[in-house]
Image 1 (cartoon, rainbow, N blue to C red):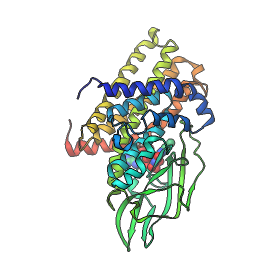
Image 2: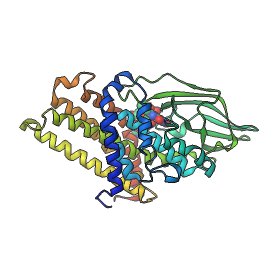
Image 3: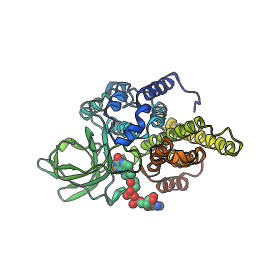
Length: 375
Ligand SMILES: Cc1cc2nc3c(=O)[nH]c(=O)nc-3n(C[C@H](O)[C@H](O)[C@H](O)COP(=O)(O)OP(=O)(O)OC[C@H]3O[C@@H](n4cnc5c(N)ncnc54)[C@H](O)[C@@H]3O)c2cc1C
């Protein structure tokens, strides 16, 4: 692994930082207070190529790789974690379409995601009764003479009220047979889809999270993404990559907390210096773990699950601890609901939940250790 950033990686990082300094960071508190979906910022991210960092140039992506993607998400999350998660999910959905789609599916949809024509895409896996146990989903797609008919409910779907495309996982029925879970491309404007009210979350207010109900939604026969019955495997592969995104988001949150604490003078006093230095060291350790997982994915490693889970587990735990500790060291003023440090404490919490909880990351790591041994 090359520990020096390449010129391309530095360029992507600089682009993201510039855009964030000018547009995303200055409005972060306001965006949080109004819970306004960041349509303008998403358009700016698309214009800068950041809605498809690891997607081929012929599909409108930057083709800059996974390390560059991680650096971009870190920068955006430092400015506003809510914008970063929306960007990360869009990149993940775009990558799944670009990797598993037929030429026609790719050409039709991916350029709309990378260019900003679609503000975002949604990854519709979780349901009210199945999150960690994703295979227990109840949503069903039944083959009919007209195509596929989808029934079921998805829960906690990021960007669900705004997405230009849904990737929907469902149990599959074909002539009474059940080939397993398949993945479907669904147009969000179709009849039979209802979008629930935005979830009132403790943090990341400007990211949109909704439930989606599918009531006899008819989609075309060719809307299957990847192989029929192989959707669960696609979900797991996508989540490995997605975890690098959330680890990167977590590091951005920790970076922001450390910067705010430094500006408040924390670290200058002997009482706080030890704790502060240790926090910096832990954030750096999480960053290196995340960049390593990103590099493994970028180098075409067939199995980077363990590293992605370790990065997500470590970075999300560190982000939560660092945000809380910085708030404590800055003092009571930072505990006001609309103080930027209080916002980071609120924003950090969900990094331990989505794309697999910390407990699930431990399960993934343990299984891989048992199967493949220690490094
Ligand atoms: C803000 C937000 C945005 C989200 N965005 C999306 C999205 O865009 N798309 C999407 O599909 N989903 C999304 N999710 C859903 C998220 O992925 C799930 O909430 C998460 O996977 C946990 O599932 P659950 O909520 O059903 O909890 P459960 O699976 O019921 O877990 C409850 C608790 O039990 C623990 N637990 C469960 N199983 C085990 C086990 N085997 N061993 C040890 N402990 C276990 C969990 O760690 C957790 O602490 C989002 C969630 C949130 C909060």
